[in-house]
Image (cartoon, rainbow, N blue to C red; front, side, top):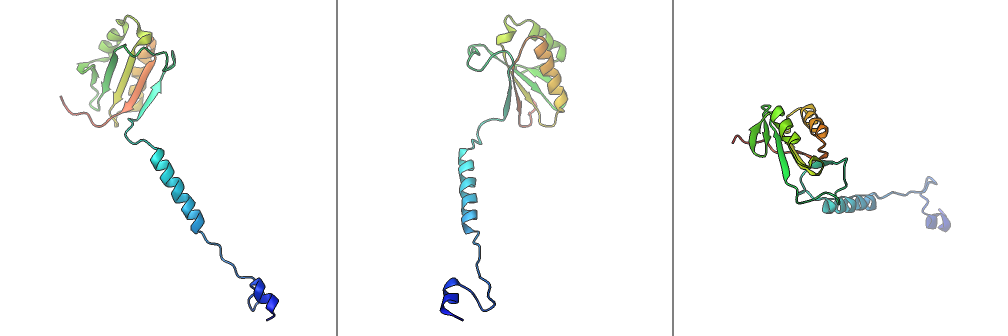
Length: 142
C-alpha cells in the first residue's frame, strides 16, 4: 500500500472507512428536551378560554365569577349549590349585564363533552360569552 493511500485512509480493499457518530445528534435532542421542559408550566390549570364578545384586556375583573360544576352523576351545581338546567337558565336571564359576566365551567373528566357544550350554548343564548372550560379532578360529595 502506498503512502498516499494510507494518508487518505484507504484500507486494503480500496474503500474508505468512515463512521458517522450519532452522539452530537443525541446531545442536541436532549438539550431541546430540557429546554422545552423548563419552558412548560405544569402548575397552570388546563382551561380553554371561549370568548366571543371581548378580549381579555377589556374584561372587567370586578365582575363576580359564576362557578358551574357538572358532575358525573348528572348533577349541576351553581356557585356551590345544587341546581338544574332550568335554574341555571333563570339565573343567567336574571343577570343585569350578562355580556360582562365571567363563567368557570368545571366538568368532571368522565362527563360527555356534549353536556358541557349544551350548557355553553344555553349561556350563549343568554348573551354570556366569557366562558372558561376546565377539566377538573373528581368531585367529592358535599
